[in-house]
Amino acid sequence: MACRLGLPTHFVWVCFLWGGLWACATPPRMPMELAEQGRLARALKNQPRFLRISYFVTPFFADESKHLLSPVNPAWLHVLQHPDGMPVPPGDIEALLPAAMPVRILKVEFPTALAIKERLPYSPRTRPWVYVAIQNASKPLILVLPNTLKNTEEFEAELNRYLTPLNPSTQIAEFSVDEQTAIRSKEALPGISAEALEMALGYPESKTIAFEGEQKIETWHWGGGQKTVSLRGGRVAR
Image 1 (tube, rainbow, N blue to C red):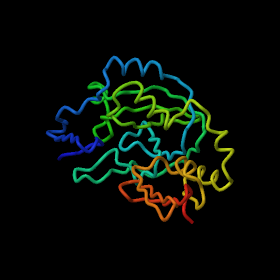
Image 2: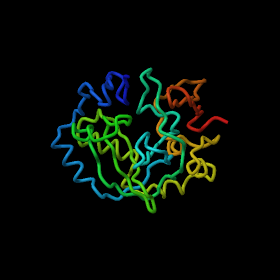
Image 3: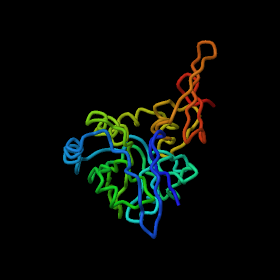
Image 4: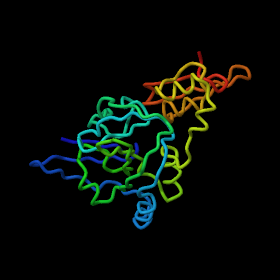
């Protein structure tokens, strides 16, 4: 049996199950130095943050001790794949957490050889995991980040896109009622701004841009095109 895990498209990590033991080719290491990973992990431990966008909470694939903090609909995720390349959904949506909710970073776990060995095989185990705590949660929430981040600056910039040290409540309060509703419900309501759409649905995988006369038309894509939203003049088309 072979499995292809959630790696950048130019990497393939193939594992074979022999006699109940996983024998795997050496997975690609993060380009960040181990010493730098350690400094980052120590600096970020127990830091207070705020959710920069709204999230879904789902099971963490086969690991029942954790939950996944998913910035997009879990049906659009591509962090773990079947042998045929099809994405593995983590599980059904169990909760929705609105942007601006206060959280705490419990720890950051980088994909070292030891960490990968201790993680369940059927999990995005070659990527950094950010363990997040929210009030009254019985399990840690895991935010999965790319394993292509080269240094502290890139890692912190990526982390800040999802867990910000600045409370976004003031920005959200300036949005319209429809925009605030869209963010709370993770919906692309007609007429909302690009900023509100980003906080509602999560960051798109890609964007295409066209023009009709002088009007700019953007199409945002998630999940390899499973979800698209068009914006005209910076607002979701009606």
